[in-house]
Length: 60
Image 1 (cartoon, rainbow, N blue to C red):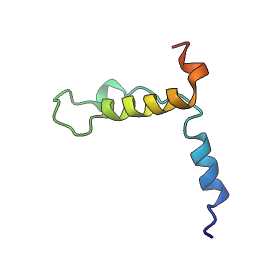
Image 2 (cartoon, rainbow, N blue to C red):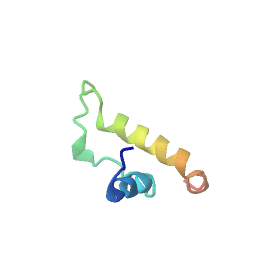
Image 3 (cartoon, rainbow, N blue to C red):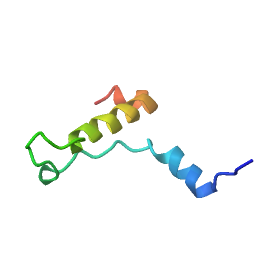
Image 4 (tube, one colour):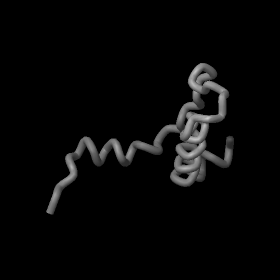
């Protein structure tokens, strides 16, 4: 059986501990042609965070 290194498992468990930061204004070109856009990635990360932290996401 493959054993996952402890630090890798710890990182996976902490992945959703903190709310993902919003992209900075200079991170999006505004052109609409990037795939995925930094905003697409942010929305996906935020969705995952909210699913993992329903008690915190109620207050946002």
